[in-house]
Amino acid sequence: MRSLLHISNNSVRKHYCSTSRCIVPAVSLLLLLAALAASNVYFTFPNRGRLQFPLPFSSRITRRGEGCDIFRGDWVPDPDAPYYTNDTCSVIHEHYDCMRYGKPDLGFVKWRWQPDGCDLPRFDPWRFLDVMRGKSIAFVGDSLARNHKDSLICLLTKAAEPTPSWPNSKHTMYYYGEYNFTVANFWAPYLVQHEQIDEDGPAHTGLWNLYLDEPDGVWAAHVAGFDYAVVSASSWFYRPSMLYEAGGRLVGCHYCLLPNVTDLTPRYALRMATRAALRALSGADGRFRGAAVLRTVDPSQYEGGQWNKDGNCVRTRPYRRGEKKVQGFELDFRNLQLEEFAAAEKAANDGGGKARMMLMDTTEAMILRADAHPSKYRGWTPEKHFNLSNDCVHWCLPGAIDTWNDMLLHMLTSTHDQ
Image (cartoon, rainbow, N blue to C red; front, side, top):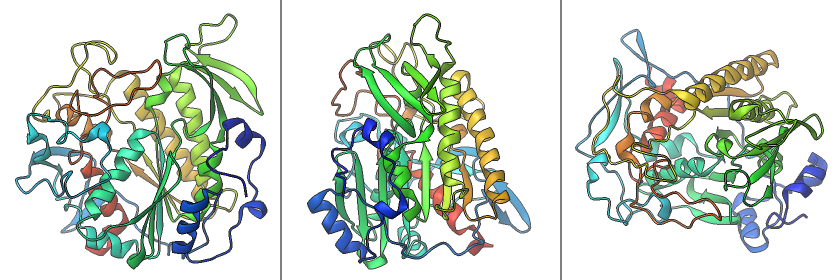
């Protein structure tokens, strides 16, 4: 079997893993995880039970015959928070361990999301694990996808501790043996195949080749073995890139500053990468038969300067609704994600509903939480040529991002509350 640790982007592009070459015998998942931890092999999952459709994937909560949208609302005080700390959860990455690194005002943890006209219950770890018994969920995307996954693991620590494994340094797995439940995180910052061709690049953040119609080979090869896939990516698309489609044909770039190459902007790159990822999850090829969740763009919150200069996020309480709005590239990103989601949902339905599409539209809630970023209160191992002076991209744990898992649990269980 091919080593997962040493697969390069080029080799993945040239050697897509076919079903016949990548199937692992249906041994118990616990033994499989142990083998992965020991050997770091290229892997797939045995089928451990599939979703029983129909399940509810609406964002609406019904109360007394009326509904409300869980993604529209405001932040209200929550005196009972936080529900874990960096002492009770060991997976909090130093990038967003704000308690450890001395964020002076911890009031940012004392808020919860209140949808208009109804309540969104706080995350219940025992209920979540019971709902996910015998199932699996993969988080696919950039460091914010990892941020989301870490929030989930931390919220679950009150009920159970997982057995972790590391197929490689950027792909992690957690197994809850009592529940036969698996959480995985696949690092795929562009969702599609990519390779760095210049460590410096025009903006001193590197220059990348993006193959916009080829889903990243690692997650795409394995996602068929999961019941749920939560997909999110946007922040890396600002980096200079060369854009390829149709078997490697150059179609344009973003900020490559090369003559006779059309600058298609990050909007085009994100649209096509999102389209490719959702197509791989729509069930069109008959492989993925689970539920795909697209989480919308995460707004960065720099004020008073740019991300790599004087910009910072020093607020100590949330904005009220209407005080801060999504705009610029982030508004465009969210709109194109909604468009691509609608197209993918239609394709999935037209294909007989083998896969289901779910939208987690968190953008409007998170634009109000500039107080919940790490700022300078985090550890940081900078990339070469890419160093955030203040981190107003990721989210402190515990903190506002825990609401994403309140929403996720509701999306999986809403019919049980009706």
